[in-house]
Image (cartoon, rainbow, N blue to C red):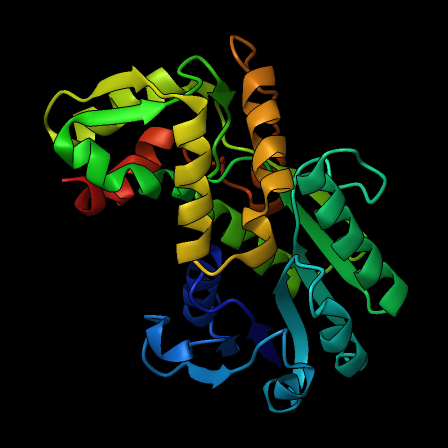
Length: 282
């Protein structure tokens, strides 16, 4: 059985490739720029882009199952060529709903609906906040000052390795078809708490300053553009993100035990994630 992992440069995809290889599975990784994926040796890497549906023919040849990032642009072209798959594991988002007024959850809900409509057996992974998004603070942490518009906003951030562990179980063991897994880290921390943790990892104090919302909008749009995320960086999505963060000020985010239920081990804490990425902040 060959498993296709798309979005080869993504944090979750890289973690998933490593876990599948460690467990002895055949893995093919695909992405727009596979040469920059930094994957382990021995992994077959192919170039494929959702904007070019024909590019998936070679990537899908001989593949039994696939891990896919949610995104509506070009998804139909991929699914039209993936009809022979036994399963798609889709990385979606907590609260995904095609009828949602929130641009983020609506887009992920539309992607989920496209997979359902394709007739391919599916499993949906719905994480909340990604701990890996805090890598955007790497330089500010090194400089000793992090700026954020909502210092008291909560998030139960999840380690990319835990998302990958759930994906690996879904792809390689039975009982996961038709499941939609809500995934969070084990604790809800404020931005202040997160910055404090990263300061300890970096080995020096890190000050948190309240950021002007206009500056935050511009920085977020620039970050999305630099990462080539297209629609993810649209003004509508940025405003949805701001509303979500504002709603969680002084309100702890609910956590789930899905990682433990699926994998048999509890989700890693934010402190564990920070320790695993200490080199990025030091």
